[in-house]
Image 1 (tube, rainbow, N blue to C red):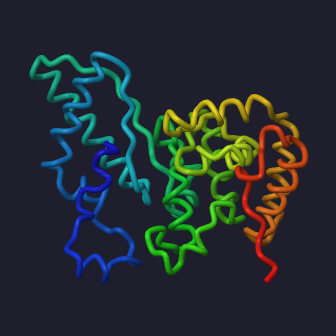
Image 2: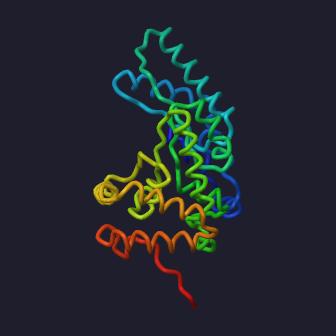
Image 3: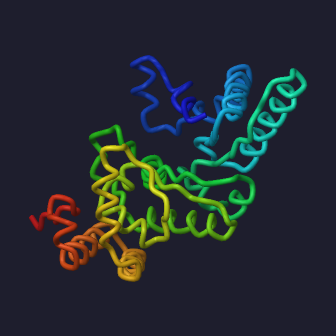
Length: 257
């Protein structure tokens, strides 16, 4: 299902320039629900693959609980059809990507509709801060440690924990040792990243004290600006665990010029 994220996002050069800062209206789950002729064959393939091993289905760009219910209805309809055809099917866990503010704001209710959350931090930062991460003109406003982003992550993690479902954090934040430390302090227990990042992040997390990173996260949540958060992360982590966090792994100090 994640493979459908980019479908519908391709446009000509002129259209792309004009649409750069507009919400991506016809991609991912929105495209799939508008084009069930594309969605249903892929759902059938996933259900059949699940008969051979565990398969998780992630619904991307969820902004409304109705979209989850519609997608789950398609899954159940195709499951029933496959059984009628005598096909072997397996159980599929259905999760929601948390990557837009509306999903965060209804996270408590959304958590009751799915089997797990996957927090897409790259898009969550982009849509929370209204910053196109592909536009160099506004790159300075793309701040993963912005207090609003951290509040959103915490709320989603709390909602998942309250509903008793797993929450996996992915994106560039999960692959950065310093940011991963903050995520653990916020309550993250599962991180997703490229295989090459796993040894470094695992080694870092194994050397941390849970109570101390929880305290760090509380300090970050109390901050008013991303600059303040980055300063706290740099000073606290670099001072407490210099062997785990050499300067190049920490947010760079801001120029006073």
